[in-house]
Length: 478
Image: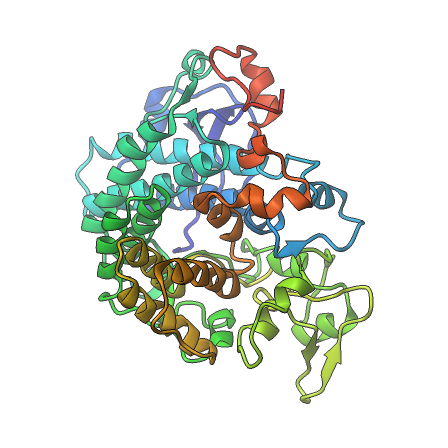
């Protein structure tokens, strides 16, 4: 994402209503009386204005992914909160606390309303690259809504900016309508109108491949396997490839490589917005601090389970970055973790020059994910032999044996396992279990109850509307 100073302030009534006014690109939002529409319109005239506004939309998306791992990984079975000093995460891990998704809701609607405002204002102007700005904004909005419906189910469906009185009367909309009227059409537009690639400072913005890959994930989630197969096959002919070395995928000094499709962008440059994932997932251990030059508080969180590490075959190159038992320093000496930690993930280890200001991106979709999604779609379309070809590409890169001559049911199980091994700590496991209908089967021993397939709406939202006929809480959380 190109770094541009943004001069837009967002006013929101709770997190459902957003009205635009003036501020900086920070995430410090305060309530102000809305300015006149003339003041707002002055911000949306030139291409540079819309560039700045688009950065604001991306910033909201970045906020939605802050803490995304707690939903996608900590709530599932391969990662746990081993250190008991992180009380909120312990409760999330044990299905006793349900607040981890609140930020996804609030930041999601901040971003969606910024996107809606940009789309409204761009209709009345004539600027270069107008179709691309529209498609890019719709891609981000679609991703934001995709996350919301997967986590909360039916949510308020907002396709235009709202007046304050309308926000109080905006209820929940069925999931099918949101998919059919916004998520899928927005992504189809992105798949047709976005550039194939960017260069220079623009690298990191959403591309045609990102839209197609996300559309494939949406179709897979909707169990539309024929459509998923078609669109994901298109992605395989767009120049993406697996890196030869799995560890290189997580070299955060070389983020935009052949396997990259779409990440949440971060940088540890001074005065920039870094990623706190490195600090969260790093053992508070002098060896790690010295090796990566980390400062600030390290949180001792997101510990891979030893039972998960044991799923890897001997020789699997992914094991010792996915569930490491220690780190190797520059002199080639392996330092085992002290006894208080069972394992750490190495996927987000990078320099942290100031508190929580890590350089690691958060991957939304990378090419290995596309290959495994395509294998799943093909297998469900009764093309098991072809599905194995794509599954085997991922396994061969990991340095483990490939498969042949196995049944559709066996292949289904192996694809599910491979997604665990390949994509752990990238925010996928919870959503995969829900999509496969296996969440309760797998997670009941950890404390999950049937109603917990959906997360509760943030309580402050429900109390603010204070009308169950408009914004009812999800069942089981009343």
